[in-house]
Image (cartoon, rainbow, N blue to C red; front, side, top):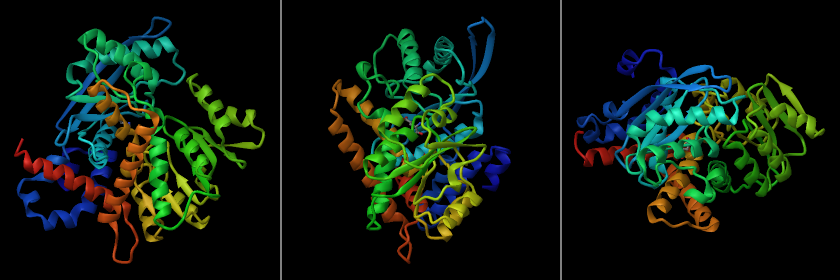
Length: 439
Ligand code: GLU
């Protein structure tokens, strides 16, 4: 860590993600001297390569804008580089390196042959017109296409990148490359996409959380669930939790949260999805539309009493104080749906209180998992049905849960899911690297 801090000063999210993994794999590392002699850690913590590029585009008033674009190809020991593209003003090298590092372990957990990558730009999609989004996506792909390919590196969605953006990027890739392959995932259903991909992260996260509940002889029935965000992920969580008998009482945006005592339902979710398509804030208008809901400005939903908290927005959105507040309010489970949604202090507080805590790289792996299934369908030039994809997603999430139990169960029976997920992911990637020599 000291070495890494000297080499990459100030990259705080990246250093945070590496620290968490190194801490939990220490015992396995020490028991297996072959890792040390092949310098597996030193090789695994540095991305294979980083591409940064300039993205110039014209807005609707013909003004020129310049953004930074990135692709971090982190590790391809077990399969082609795979990971989303984040479009958000906060995007920088540290954030994308942390996401690429996490992705490497997450993808290993999915049971599929997927390496780890991440990309993105500091472009802010909020308030942009559809044509501005298109021009940006095309300009972004004008650089990115050089280093991606269906067997090399397969980008997908993330914060700010959904089906529409993938469509514009795919259109440009095809134009440049003259090939119709599964180079991106999250594609539209009638041009190579997979059923269930839009819902997969949220559904998978709910299946994983359900496994946590079942292993404690518990269920979602009658549980109050707080969720943050309402992007690509939170709506799938809200839909599936509601289906399984839980009540989702919050969603949030950058400027506050909604508390809806009656809980979200399919109609309210449809209303939110329609609003979201307009690129505008959706959280405060919800309270105008549904009088039973209140908008709490400038706050996070972790002050609301709940049985299960599912942070689904962005990194470090739930801190030590939030965790303490959740515990004081009687929380029974926390499932991190966002990537690194909880700070190290929050995780420590939850672990000390023996609250089952599922980390993002296990909980949200269903999204990239179904992306992997999209790649398989593209390669076979076949489509699976909803039931086929959903069954495979279910299977994936329960095998990830089993891996966490296998490697994370402590002497007193408490499951440290962070340790379990990190060790399971690490062993798979590290062993593949050992098999393939020093490259
Ligand atoms: N961005 C998602 C993630 O964090 C999905 C990535 C993918 O489908 O490749 O896992």
